[in-house]
Length: 135
Image 1 (cartoon, rainbow, N blue to C red):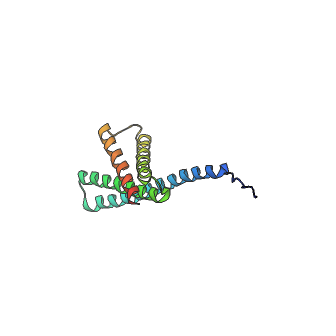
Image 2: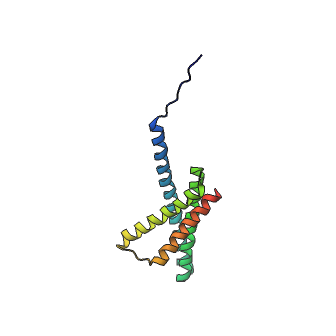
Image 3: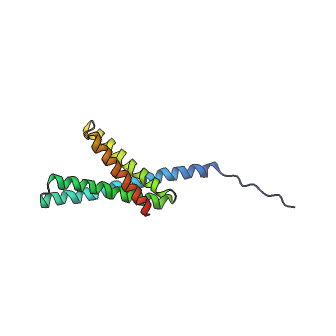
């Protein structure tokens, strides 16, 4: 009778999966920031042509956060294929984290009050989760 051969898992394959996940997250974050840049350029053009009020610009920025978070969550859900809403929420959180780090680096301190920071984090995470669920 034949002996069954055991198939050994190559540890490099497991490592590659983790590396691919990190690379995928970085690619999705890049896509989110490309979308953010394009939408901010469009908002700047609207501000220039239509002389928008400060309130309208603030609403536009919130819409940009939500749109970028949704797109990132959607891409994360399509890429990861399991626990899509959690990956989407994580992408929204990473997006917010990079925003905060960039803000601290360029302004040499935090310019946002705590309530606004919490609200912005909730918007980014919720929109990312919604994108993940929609994928």
